[in-house]
Length: 169
Image (cartoon, rainbow, N blue to C red; front, top):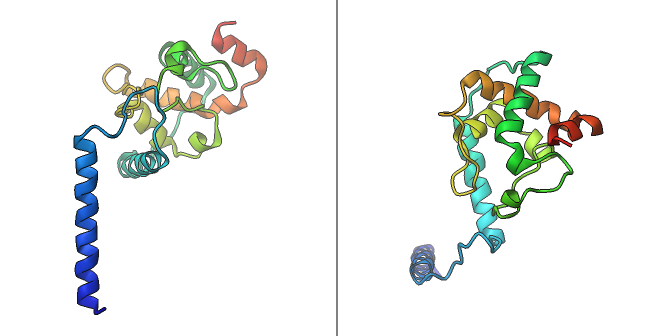
């Protein structure tokens, strides 16, 4: 087969695949209910798009507040705005969190903690569409959102007593 014929064949196969996907979507084949888990393909594509979007838009070069008073204010912001869904690391999920799909991430886990401060700030500020994660850009001042990120950095280091206090037990 010549290179030209191969290119035409690949183009036709790609077009047929695209048409097939469009027909399946138009017929309602994908179940988008929050009670069904997304497919591996859906998760892979969604994570790739999210990661690229966050990397492209996250602020760079901003210094994170590290003083104890800022971290304490971040803890209070977390308690008021995040605890209901994210809970405490290793703790039980709330009924709200249990009903979210995709599942709510544990913010102390390495995957979350490996993000830059700017990426965490962007996620807190803008939220994540179609996940249940609200954006706090319009409801929390910028300073509070940075303090919240400072607390998120401290979250994996909290001891049992601090985790119990955070959860209100």
